[in-house]
Length: 184
Image (tube, rainbow, N blue to C red; front, side, top):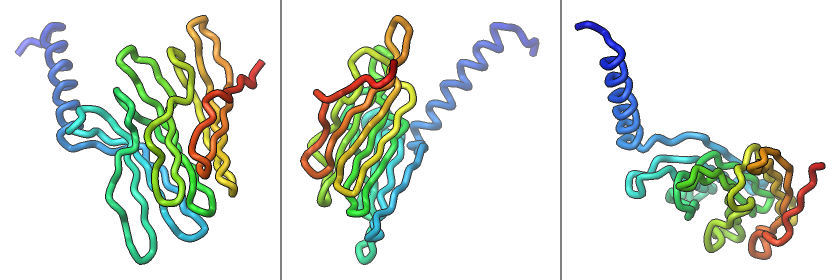
């Protein structure tokens, strides 16, 4: 067989299609994160391809002595691809998970969900501004359940700024009206 540009292009196209089919068929999981509380409760989070939704979602699982692992739970209720979760929990086992969701217009938006007294809050909350891409991001939860999220956000100009927002895993979630730009 003579190797031509056309043949090579078709080969590459079939290789990409085959690779994607393989990932979705095996429900590929990646980007794991784990935290352990002072009481020994382990919380894990990761992204995984979900065949039922034909998208990547964020899943969590918890382990506690005496009861073992709970069932996997999908916590990303955002449309589109969800990936790159970060997690932080305090000594009492309260905390939050943040992640990026890529919507249909390919904008990377930061979302989060809080956890308190054994349950996740009602749904994902958008943290970053609509229409701006999020770069690097971090989360911290203190012993009182106070949450601080910090992220880099790029506008269309293109410039990037650093923003910070607070929340509480104890009193019910995020302070989305309290987003503050802290960079110059």
